[in-house]
Each structure stands twice: as C-alpha cells, then as structure tokens.
Length: 209
Ligand SMILES: C[S@@+](CC[C@H](N)C(=O)[O-])C[C@H]1O[C@@H](n2cnc3c(N)ncnc32)[C@H](O)[C@@H]1O
Image 1: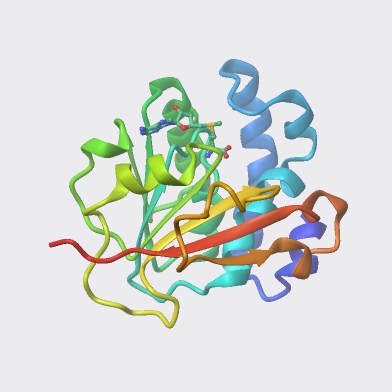
Image 2 (image 1 turned 180 degrees about the vertical axis):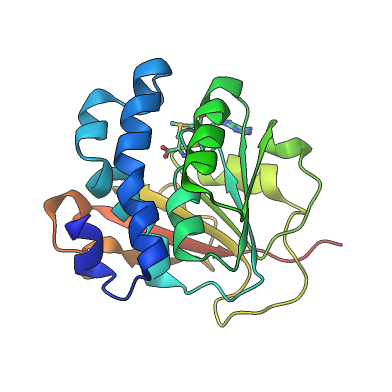
C-alpha cells in the first residue's frame, strides 16, 4: 500500500481503504480459484495494482467516462482503475467464467459500484467507450480488429479516444503499422526496476458509427 501512496499521494480515505482491502481479497480468492500466479500475489501492489495505475499516470479519466477492460482476467487493469476513478464506469470483460467469478467477488468485497462485468468474448460486446484498456491479451493488430466499432464519437479528453494498452519490451515490429501510437515509458513515472521496460501504448481509434 505504501507503494501506491508513494506515487498517488492524494487518495481519499475511501480509495485507501479499497486499495488496502485488495491484498486480503485476492489472497483469499486466489486460494480458491487461481487467477494470479503465486509469485505475483506476493507482489500484488507492484506487479498488478501499480502497473494498472500506470494508465492513470498517462490520463486522468474525466467523470462520466466509459471504459472497457478487455480480457480483464483477475481484474487488471480494470479494478485498480475503477478505484482510482470512482466517477467513471468500467466494463470488465473476459471469455473465461471462473476469472470473472473472482472479479465479481472482489468488486463485491470492495463495494465498488462503478464496475460491470460480462462473461463474453469482447467481439460480442455492442457498446461504445471513451477508452479501451488492456494488458497481456493479444497483439495489437488482433486487438484492434476485436474492438473496432466500440469507440465513442464524442471526445472528452485531450488524449484522443482509443486504446490504452499496457505492454512491455520492444514494440517496433508489433506497432509498425500504427503510426499514430504514442508510447509512454512507465520508467519515467515509477523508479522500481519492474517498470524499466514497461509501457502504456496509446492508439487513437476512429468512431465508426
Ligand atoms: C494473460 S490473461 C491477462 C489477464 C489480465 N488482463 C492481466 O493482465 O492480469 C488474458 C486474458 O484474456 C482473456 N481473453 C483472451 N481473448 C479474449 C477475448 N477475445 N475476449 C475476452 N477475453 C479474452 C483470457 O480469458 C484471459 O483471461
């Protein structure tokens, strides 16, 4: 938790309570349904919570924004972002039901009222969002194909509506066809070694009616 406060010192009491509760909720639920690796659960705040909040270093979602988390797994990056932006609505989608069982239990345990979950492949979601967030789900060309038509027309932010993807390593080849991407290095915001090669990739996407 100290790690979160180091980089996000202005949290409300409610946010601090919710972030603090994550550890015991994930420890309990992960024993029943394994959604986070053992190594990662010991470093939940570094590898999952702070990593997810890397998106909050790049953008401050405005109240009323609608955000989709594709392939949320155990709830990342969606759950930490939903705690960080309580006035935004988050739709967390995964194609594996048991993962969403954990997500639903964590959402209930936290009393988060801005999260909706759907057990589905993302291609079947028929809604529009200001931003689509994700981590570790698909390479960019596949991902872009899956989410086309799911971007809202109205721009509320300086950053154009589109994808905010947590990725790592050398992305030159994967992103070579996407000339409008901006890459934000998480090492510029966080000084832990874990973030040295981690990035947030912003890819603006056009509204498609
Ligand atoms: C490696 S896990 C990553 C989970 C989480 N985003 C994280 O970073 O901890 C990939 C997840 O994507 C989900 N997934 C893969 N393809 C999907 C699709 N087309 N629609 C919805 N979920 C999908 C899988 O079920 C799996 O839970």
